[in-house]
Amino acid sequence: MHRKLGVVVLAVASLLCFCLFGEEPSVGGKLKADPIFQSGGIAIHGYDPVAYFQDKKPVKGKKEYEHQWMGATWRFNSNENRDLFRANPEQYAPQYGGYCAYGMSSGYAAPTEANAWSVVDGKLYLNYNREVQKMWKKDIPGYILKADHNWPQIPKKAAM
Image (tube, rainbow, N blue to C red; front, side, top):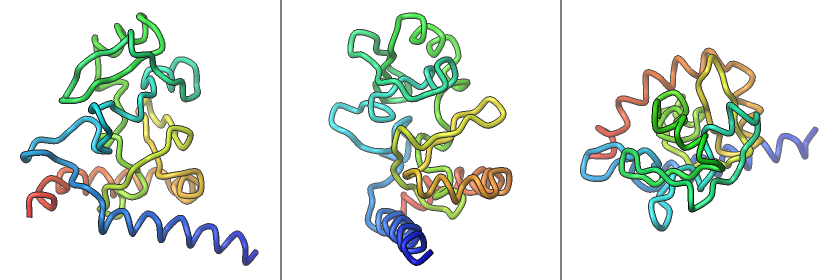
């Protein structure tokens, strides 16, 4: 019991530390598709966003299947996945610009891990890690409502 509580406390503390000292979710006031700044501007750590829907798991994209969208380079596991994304990126791109959905529900822009994800009502949500994902799963509809409310305000906070 105490060990489990310690893991949850550590996950929340890590999330809050990043939120307080992390990078801005926008550049020049314009939202980036991948707010987690990586070298080369690779979106969602190079994972194929379409694979979450098609393969039901995170799949690393390949450099030969890239597409530029919203200032980021998106990678895909296949030509077919790239073409699906290209035709309708909003359908496959993660919500909240790839930030942690649970963190966004509290008004924070936190990074995510590829293996902490959910598809809910046809939308991809990423989480900080699997421990945070467990908290997210306790009230997904409630957290989505809060995150949807907070997301438009994030660029204003970053511009301050």
